[in-house]
Amino acid sequence: YKSVNPIAWDPNNVPDGAPYFFESEEYLIEKRTKVTMKKILEHANGKNICIVSHVPCAQAMALYLEGAPSIEESKIGPWPLGGITMFTREEGSEKWNLDMYADCSHMPGEYKNGLKEWSLPSLTK
Image (cartoon, rainbow, N blue to C red; front, top):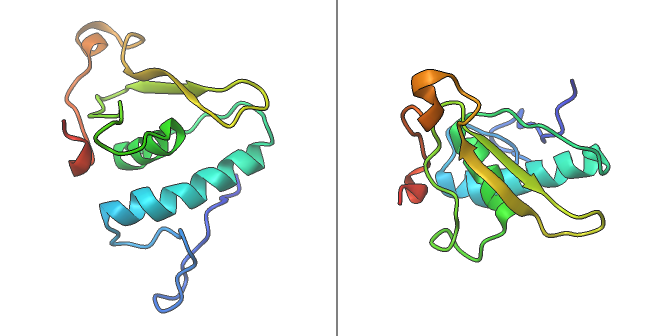
């Protein structure tokens, strides 16, 4: 494993988009996720990728790929435990398609409909 994220070693010299705690929701969505996703997609070199993450980061990445003009117009919302989201795009296209969001149909029993929901504050619709 090799991280493609910029790293912040010095609090007085934080590279653009580096994870640095404590960060605001705005920084996560507007800076860190954009830098991270661009690097992940560049590093993937057109291959399929799977990203496993905590909800705030996963929601921010989904917002980036969705490309909605605003959070209000986004389809991204609260995320249940074990929810799977999938984006695809045609080869050569820059536009991502949201095929599945926070789907729990793979989960057993009572978890199948989703259990609890987590969300960035701006996405609690």
